[in-house]
Length: 608
Image (tube, rainbow, N blue to C red; front, side, top):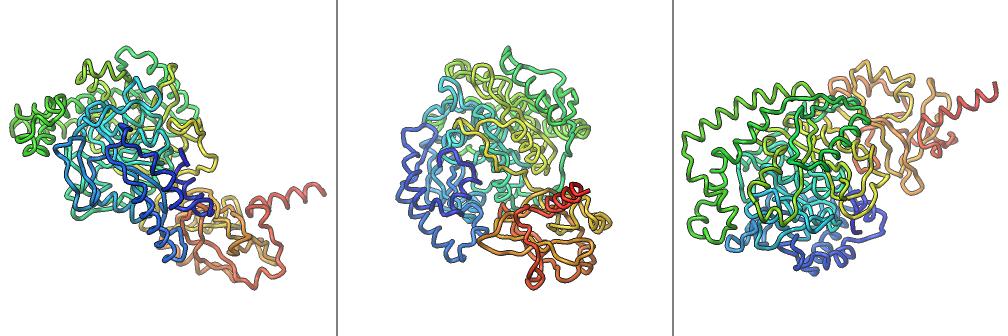
């Protein structure tokens, strides 16, 4: 179990290899009070009780795993997010309080069947990119304990990297969901602001804060994001996603903007690792476009040198007035600068930010995304302790500007440096292109597979490309025979402006038959339950306005019903009446219609 991905957890439960109760019996002891990555570990007995209740939920649903997509999957959350009945500390003992309600983002995971193991350590009040500013202990790097883990979501990154959970929630205001990912060989998904409810979060900067996701693979990160993303009417900063954003993709040869000038602060190991990462991007088909990123660095300077620091003070004003000595001295020094600023400074800085954003949006419009180092260097714990503010600020060189500009980002592993420490790069795109980043991030991982976090495990071979979301004005249709790309009836899709999405397979409950007497030749797909096999299909998004005419043209014995895909998704697709397959040739063993047709052609050519 240790180091499993979300997909592997699901496969183990669906196959009957494992039950949530048995899993929690084994996982409970891994959440240890002496581990600085954890602030709160739930008792094994409580985990088993949750698992037993979950098993009953599944039974009440008729054993339908699709209704509990995260059934039994363990996870952790950063301890600035509320969970009902558990304390929230934000890494400050004096601030600790029992939460009355669960943050909506966490509740969505629990509703999907996930099981919470515990709450993780952080730079106090989410102020820092280092992971050293907590009275609960310094969280070390998962590859070399002399080095920092990155922060502020240090504990969440650590427990995922070490395989204790397949994913964890962090938060991100200036890079806290990305820098720890880069330092621990992880995916760090920093979503579009407002895509995930931030209600129930101890705020750092409410106008900028995001709930973030740490995971071992881009597939997992995006699947968790898909569970979390929802408009929250009670969160003033929540935003509904525009329908058009759901289908944005970069294409097979994306244009990626890279910095014309880079600052490495003397770190040649990171410089060489980035050069190797750029070569990997080109091998993936990307066109690299050098850009002047000065406006981005100017924007970043506003975050800590401008009045946004006052947002951190506003979140803690009452607590600071009564418990100033309880705050970590570095955090207190940073937040205390807010008292030097006034309302006029706020408006002046906002005018400047708006001007910077206009220029930055023009800059990023020239490319599909930016590809930058996640951090320009990494420090030992001792080095950070000796110079905590300057060295921390350097780590935000390529992260601080993203939330201020209302962009989204995905940190991805980019191999190990020559000293064995992880190096990461970050993809950055305009708001609502989270799915496009995840899809490219997964192609990145599949092209140059690395180990998962610090577990030493290789990337699972079963990993699939992140599926595109379905636009509101389309119907996703699985085609299995003559409507496949290059087949005789594919024009019936293209003439209706249907868009190709991906190649995938059904679940292993189907059989495929070659129907006799059909012109052009067509297959019949039947759901057989046990004894079936995965059948290859293509997914196409058909405009809703044209779907009716398409269905009207489907001849008997075929029809359109609901198909189950290998990953549990349910889509519309071709089905066949049972009488039509009586005596038909069972071609299930070919795995799909295209392979069967290819075999017929090969047989004909061999006879010629």
